[in-house]
Length: 251
Image 1 (cartoon, one colour):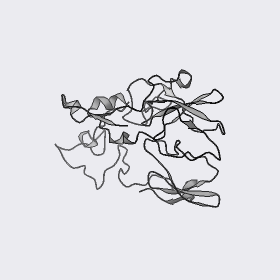
Image 2 (cartoon, rainbow, N blue to C red; image 1 turned 30 degrees about the vertical axis):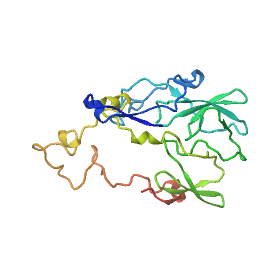
Image 3 (tube, one colour; image 1 turned 30 degrees about the horizontal axis):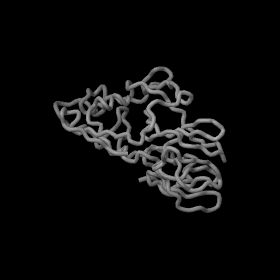
Image 4 (cartoon, rainbow, N blue to C red; image 1 turned 90 degrees about the horizontal axis):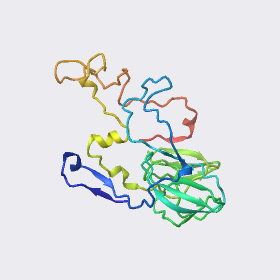
C-alpha cells in the first residue's frame, strides 16, 4: 500500500492523504457474502444515546468474514483483494476446492493466485492474524503446558490455550494509521459526529462548563460528563475471570 498526498488547492486538501489502493483487484463485493446490517449509531434498544458522537456516514454493505477458519484441510485459492468499509484492513476472497467462497482478513504480502490452507500440518507461509486491525500482529513468546505466552499489539503479555487456532503472518494495509483525513467532512463520511469540549458548555451540560470567558475547569482532574474521572482511572473489573491469564498489563 502506498499513500497519495494532495496539493493544497483548498484547506481540505492541504493535509489530506489517501491510500493508493494499488492492492485492490476488485471493486464490487461478492453478492452472496455481502448484506445490509443495521448500525445502531450509538443508540440502545430504546433509542437512547448511549455512545456519543456516532451517526450518519455513507451507506455500507457488511462483508461476511470467516474468522473461525473451520474448513480444515481444504485448500483455497485467493481470487481477489477487496476494500472493506467496515474495517481498516483489506479483505481477500477465497475460492475453496469444494466450490465454497469465503472472505478472510487480508494478510500482508498475500497476492491473488496464492493457495491458503487451514491445517495442523500446514506450511508456514502467510495467513491472517489473531489481531484483526490493519498492520496488527501477535508474537509467540513461549510454550509451556497447556498454554502459550503471547505478546499482543498493546504490549500486554498473556496466556492463551494451546488448543486455539492462529494464522501466520501480519495483517496487511500497514500504513492505514499514517493517513490524514484532512477535513471534518471525511470524518462524517465514516459515521463519526463532532466532539464538543466540555469547557465550552454550560454547567447544566458538563461539569467543566460555565464561567466567564476561557477559564479553568475548576477541578483537580478532568472528568466525564457524568462526573467520573477521565484520566488514569482503571476501568477493568478487579475480579474478572481472565485476570489470572494476564502476565503483564498493557502499557
